[in-house]
Amino acid sequence: MNDIKDVLGLQTNTDAEELVRQKKCIEAAKSIVDEKAGDMGRKLTYHVTTFGCQMNARDSEKLKGVLESAGFIYEDDELSADFVIYNTCTVRDNANQKLYGHLGSLGAVKKSRPDMIIALCGCLTQEKSAYEKIMRSYPFVDLVFGTHNLFDFPRLLVSVLTREVTKGKGHIVSEIWEGTDRIVEDIPVKRNYPFKSGVNIMFGCNNFCSYCIVPYVRGRERSRGSDDIIKEIEALAADGVVEVMLLGQNVNSYGKGLEGEISFPELLKRVEDIDGIKRIRFMTSHPKDLSDELIDVMASSDKICRHIHLPLQSGSTRILKAMNRHYTKEGYIDLAQKIRDRIPGIAVTTDIITGFPGETEEDVNDTIDVIEAVRFDGAFTFIYSKRTGTPAASMPDQVSEEKVKIFFDRVLAKVQEVSTRQAALIEGQTMDVLVEDMNRQDQMLVTGRLSNNLNVHFPGDASLIGKIVPVKLTECKGFYYLGDMI
Ligand code: 5AD
Ligand code: SF4
Image 1 (cartoon, rainbow, N blue to C red):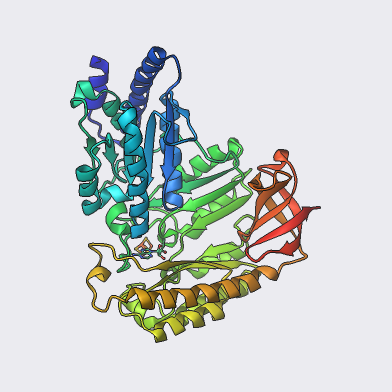
Image 2: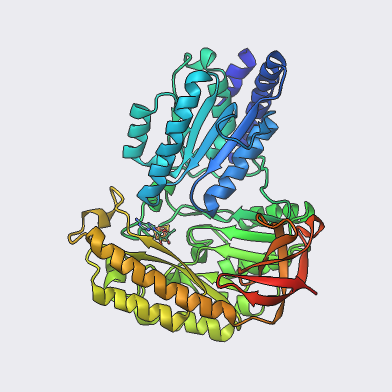
């Protein structure tokens, strides 16, 4: 046990030293887990439940990597696992409510299985009021940590596994940091798909859109060094990955603040040069920072997918100003047109919020205008959710539920009309599909994705998964295609 105390207490100065310490913690966790497994006569199991965005999905792969390196094996049913971790989201209130629902069910299970360990991490834990609610109302939670110390999960895991030694049994192990400048590379990762992977290129956000809680829970923007990113993608390619999704809240400002660093389009060119990588995606682009250089690089690339996700949020210049978005209705339409002109066949998708404070019918008309002018290939539509601590939460004229519903239904109907029309444009063509999975409903079919991000279902078997194959798009079903492999 002295060894474990040493590992927990160690101080480190550099990110590289920190990685060594975390690896020692994984070894320490493994010896505890192996001993418990020996006593129980079976392996210990884990389940990771992920809420929210692609960033969280990627973070969960890191949690899984650590847990598997520490000797846990995956359990599909979250209510049966020995170690359950929720990677939470708080971008809208319904994400919080979903978590509380899950915790309620798990609390009941824990009464009969007190040895079960329940952990929470991710964005919700960084929000003060939600954190306080967890501490107050869910005392059966064993471990809570935030977005800034995810790299510290191995050490926290040892802490929670050895609570008798470190903190006293029954006590919640909890560490939330306000921020960090640490970027610890090479924490183990267990990928959800062998053939595709997310890759963080930056963390945090500096934009402070007035409705958004992300800058408060994910902290200031920090870019990873390009050499580290390239090294990671080369290793992924060597391990069979053919598609990477470069992840950041605002990828177009990649590299800012890093000395001697390169721009996002330059990073894309370097990724393009990596053998074995066949498709490159990225998420998310802020319209205000999207450069002509990026459009040029996309236009001349063989590997960058024909898809850009470009959150609009609102089509009203007045509302955009109140949202602190730094572009206008006309500016957005011109940008989307420029992208479509330069990159034929590209799909443009977006996020739209209805019900932002002060929104009127005229503002919604502007949003509808933009949807028609841009011809979005897809859109996520959200009802504005008031997030405590953001500027919009204290703005006057919060829109009534009744009105929001009318606005939301109008926007959704228009988006569906336009995107169905867009999807049908490629019917009859033959296009490359990256096969991702067996079809959930029909085991005679496989499911894959076009470069433009549309799903295609076609007859095939599991041997196709991870391959890129030509498929004739025979029947458009609105948001997806049925096809036949050529
Ligand atoms: N209410 C509703 N939607 C929001 N989003 C971010 N914050 C809020 C909020 N408070 C949406 C934005 C963003 C997406 C990830 O979530 O559309 O692009
Ligand atoms: Fe939130 Fe705006 Fe940052 Fe996106 S760009 S994470 S919407 S603050």
